[in-house]
Length: 270
Ligand SMILES: [Zn+2]
Image 1 (spheres, protein in one colour):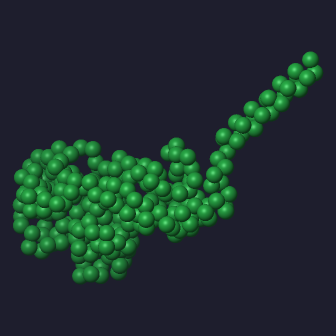
Image 2: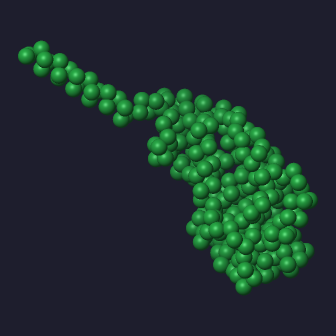
Image 3: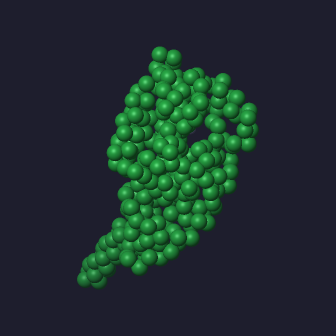
C-alpha cells in the first residue's frame, strides 16, 4: 500500500516536472543563448538562402528596418537585444522561440508583411481619380494621364509628407527636394501590360499582372538611389535613408503599408 502511494507520488512529480519543462522554453531563454542567437543572426542576415518572386534571394539584411519595427526592437541586428525581440515575436506568432531569424522565422515574417498589404485591387473608377500637380512627381515632365491618384490616398499622402518634412527636418529636404515625390501612382491595366512588355525579365515580384497600382492607391515614392530598381545594391542604399526609415516607423499612421521587397512601393489601406 505504502509502496503504491509512493510510486503514485513519484509519477505525479515526474508529470509536473515534464509539464514544467515543456511550458518553459529552455532554448534561447538565458542571456548566453541570446548571445549565441545574435552570432547566428549576424551570419544569416547576410547568408540565409530563400526564394521570392521566382528568384533566389540571400540574407535578410535589406529588411532590418521592417523586422525591427515588427519585433518592436530598435537594436543592432547582431545584438542579443535584437535576438530577444525576435524570441518574443516568435512566441507571439506560435513559432518555437530561439531568437534566430532562420528560414522558418523569416518566411513567417515575409507572410506577415504580405498580409498587411491591400486586399482590394480592383481598378479605380474615373470619379475616384484625381490628377495630381506635376510638382508632386519625381519626373517634372510626367504627362497628365500618368499623374492620376486615388483622391483619398492622395490626401493621406500629402498629410504624410508634411509630417515627414516636419519630423525629419533637413534630412528630408536635401537631394534637391525630391525625397518622397511620386514616381508612379495609378496605372491602367493597359499601361501596366505595356510596361511588362518593355521589361519581360522583371519577374513575378516586379510588374504584377494584377497590380495594386490599378487601384490608384499604391504609390511609388522616391526613397533614394535608382528610383525603382530591385538590385540588392540599390535597395541597400534605399533602406539606409532616413526618409525610408521614417516611412517604416510612421506610414501606418497615415494608412500606408509597405511592400517589403520594394522600398519605394507603399499602399494606402486607410
Ligand atoms: Zn509600385
